View 1 (cartoon, rainbow, N blue to C red):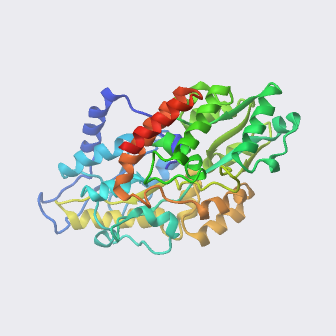
View 2 (cartoon, rainbow, N blue to C red):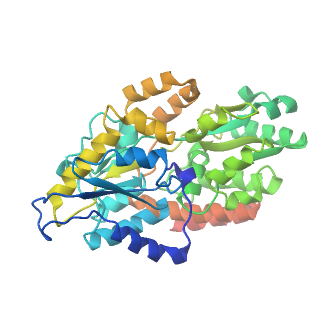
View 3 (cartoon, one colour):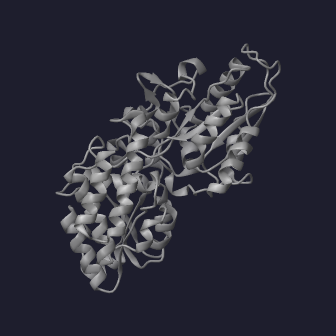
Length: 416
């Protein structure tokens, strides 16, 4: 995902307005409407899912500097949840942007729907990216884009709280030991754990380490292992280890709760590593534990640079897209781009340099290299499965520990 934490949810009533607005912002200067030979463009457009960065931000300035010679780059932004719908309308009207940054699980869906041009048609260089990070951009053997970088999830802890409660973080190696730690810190008068259980992909992204850590598989979302993961978080709500707001908290909101200094743990992303190092209390990252021990598998987050399908002036649009993507994701720029967002470079050599330059990244290196793609097993079918898991997760958290209700919620996900 994601910097999934930074996405906001648009109001339903605003969605149709946003679709129209984004479509109107598609690349301009179609010199010779209907031509596919590639007339010169004077305006190129990039869509990204970072509405928290306004037009005066460093990110906006950085992106606009990648405008190909003779063009002006127009950046338009919308929440991740809206981009795919907006793109569908824009491609249909042949008014799509030159480049879109899509959350990685949306890429197979967009490609299968005929919204994206193959990387080879556009001229996007797909070489040199780590296989586990580049994987979501390949559908049926065809590459459609490249990762902007990568992020993933870990378990932050407040060392001050753990020390006062007599909890050794090295002892937390499984769900049982984590629950024992939560019991001790809450009995000592502190709060337990924050996580984002918000409905939709962001909540599923945060649930997957527990889902996979139980041994569950996305092909069987109603399995006993999936139920065990749902029961874990349901019990956290029921026992008061996690706040009831977890049902609606996104990653930014759950992080803000951790920053109050009252919570012992926070499941959250690598993009908060720098912020964690700047707190008055000592915030440390550890791997998320699997059910029976060891580190749980974690999902790869982050977006892909892709080029939408064009009909009019196709060659010119694709040439512009290739130049913009090379400027932002090329070997010489990956670290600069990813440092802007708090991401890791998706190329191991580049990432090694990045980590060496700042020790806050060191604990995350292994997690990124072993992280797995959300769409690896299911491809475009991931979208429907994720929606079913999201519904089950909401049901489980609302059950607040009721085992029969948790089982029923995931049974329905399995039926879907």
